[in-house]
Image 1 (tube, rainbow, N blue to C red):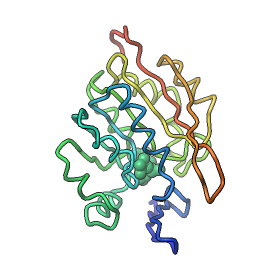
Image 2: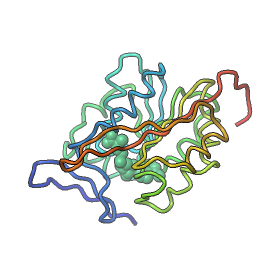
Image 3: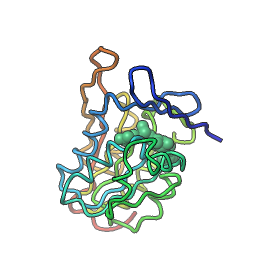
Length: 212
Ligand SMILES: C[S@@+](CC[C@H](N)C(=O)[O-])C[C@H]1O[C@@H](n2cnc3c(N)ncnc32)[C@H](O)[C@@H]1O
């Protein structure tokens, strides 16, 4: 059973930890927001997001008027409840009629989607394949789950994955099922130091016609 902790630090920031491991705070959120913009720029209207967290990716998506439907899969129900009761800012997000938050594992929630109906899948459920908070999430970065994601994307649809570091194995796994695979460095500032986080992405071929 995971222990999920939310705390307000002395500097006023909200910090999320799972089993004692830092997951995120609300100070440096450029990469979470860029993850959303990456699929918005591709014209996505129906998006599935893995990981509600503090809601920055979801907020960026819903700020776009062309977005029609966002499904968010969140493993920990307490995070959704904290957002609902105002402990985490974002009750307004949960009230958006375009948003469905489903408590559960993103693997099951992606698998349950109809084939080729999504414009984009955005995964930010862990710190990337090399810095796992949940060991069980390792499979999310492998070819099996990426094939499942590819099977839920429309032709041209995009899979974008947040990662603490670029990952050649992740790019290779994506390239088995998607085209135009790339890793984009996002400059961030961590405790005053310039660093990079990464968005690794690929898209379903435009002429894709079946399977999955
Ligand atoms: C880094 S946070 C997401 C940050 C989010 N992008 C934002 O903008 O705030 C990761 C989230 O994924 C959730 N999570 C972890 N594993 C998951 C899984 N297998 N399925 C669904 N959610 C998961 C965690 O509970 C946490 O809320």
